[in-house]
Length: 92
Image (tube, rainbow, N blue to C red; front, side, top):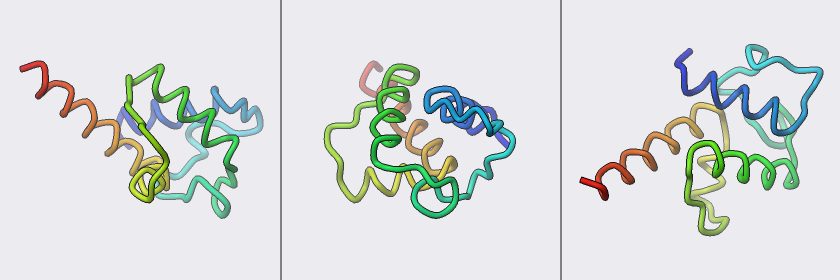
């Protein structure tokens, strides 16, 4: 498991106060919403805020692309990396 995925898992557990779950209990390919981890739309909002604060993500509006990024921990990690790369390219 890579470090960013571990950070995302810890952020999910901490920001959503999932006290009965440890970051290492979350599979990186497990669906986060409905099936799998079972998060709901309120959790999605809270997670979005936490991701913005921690990683400086820009999420303009909810679209099918954003929903796809929030599907799994692994897809979230890819999204974070792409946002960070785009930000770095703009600064260069």
